[in-house]
Image (cartoon, rainbow, N blue to C red):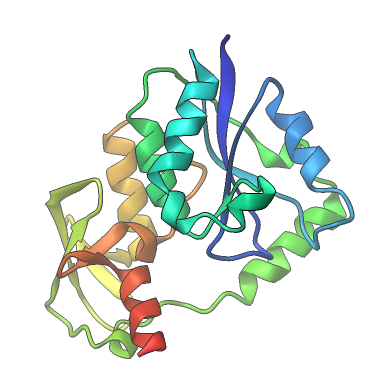
Length: 203
């Protein structure tokens, strides 16, 4: 049976994704976004596929070590959404373009914007990466950009943010992701910038 395998994110739960299946993506998001969470869930990436349950199981198995409370049957994983989307992108199927603006109320849109505005900006200096360092793209390590200053990179001769550079790459690869977090998909010395930041914070 053809169903949608989805990857959902929630701005109130940074670092977590929900991976599941549904036959109606908008309805599922609204079900999950009721009063139990501060702000609505959003679709990061979704795909309509054959053997959806098998694909879901494989996705869950791929990220099993990062699953949160698997004994309770929860479908939450502590991984960057970019990694989950990279895995799902390799599956044959139809990309689902879902516009959260069509299901979120004005009040919810305002709440989402406020939460996003409080998100800390990635700083290369804080993770020991200097200007001139080379970063590799997670999905294709032959694609690189160069650190320009504490917050920007140089990509295709332009000085842009990590996320802007990542979106440019995704478009050339025909990947229809809702958004992308630069630290989750650019790598330095074999690990994503997000993983490097977490590791250094723990150390």
